[in-house]
Amino acid sequence: WFAQLTLQNVSFVTRLRPKTVYQVKSSRSVLETKGIIADECIELSSAHAKKRGAPELLRRIEFYDTDKKRTYEFLSNNFHLAASTIAAIYKDRWKIELFFKAIKQTLKLKSFLGRSRNAIQTQIWIALIAYLLVNFAKHMAQEGWSVQRLLRIIQVNLFERKLLRSLFVPDKKWRKQEEPQLRFFL
Image (tube, rainbow, N blue to C red; front, side):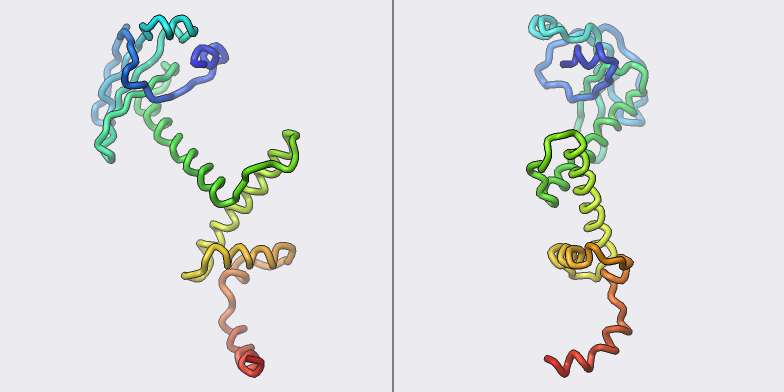
């Protein structure tokens, strides 16, 4: 797979497996202030990797994360970016995965109604808009409101032309004017 990506001019960044056998062909100077411990050009030396068509040379970057106090080893086919940039790419990758995990859990997007590319993209866009709308509503709404309440308000007012602020931050003047009448019916 690495060979296919490299042949298609696609850059990748992944973690290096702990027991990977390789030979260091050259080393680059590193900035230890940015957490980079090593930046090396390597060749995978196992017969299994060569048989599967792995790229000739890969880049191994060893990075120390001061927040988690852990050392990580990354493997990439990109020799142009700075080592700190490659470490940042891997770190940001997790943010994207957490975002999609949150979408899958929140929106319950388990199956698609259509099979065409357009149908799937439309459903994903609708799910993203709904996800952002609920998060925006949670941000604007009064403290203590549950997600179910927010979703119910959105569902009831879906085809109404109202400002979001009027839905999630009800006007206190309106409540006071209506209060005597509400008491009469309760």
